[in-house]
Length: 193
Image (tube, rainbow, N blue to C red; front, top):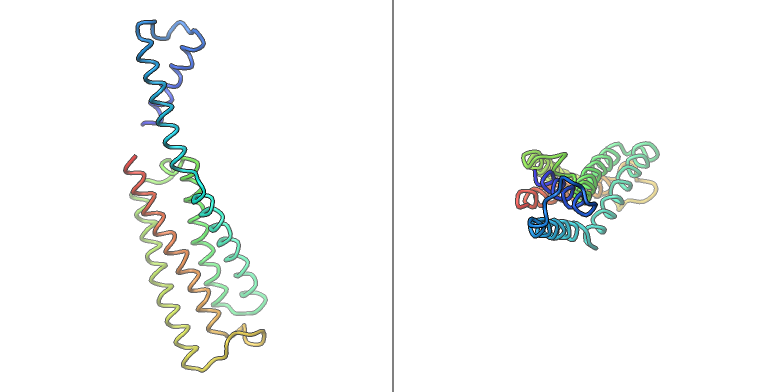
């Protein structure tokens, strides 16, 4: 709704600057000038709030997480035949991809067009479920590895190492927490605007 108001105000300002006959008269020039200043101030505030160094770091980290998870899936699932580590790498990569998608939508000012606050709450819940699954998997894999007195992962035991499975479960936990946190953060920001 605010976007439509801004577009209308911007169209009026543009028409006024081009001398269009349907624009306000000279007596209403102050109102148009105030609207133009308000539009520029709102637009400037939104642009500065959604940019910056932290946003670019978040985008780069999520992109690396997505690529790392998908390449880990291919390497561990197909090359080393460690199916569980490969699946955890894939799931972690998908959580990173969803986090990256949220960052991109938020940066481009189109998150509100794709998701309602209710949808962002559901995404947060999905992140919380991934967090719980990651915690359970980490405890299970490291517990099994310690109980079986497994050696640390090396080239010979990568296909059966529970430590590798636990590490990929940890990365899934990390991206699930990230997805839940950013979905909650963007939901709060969207409701405040």
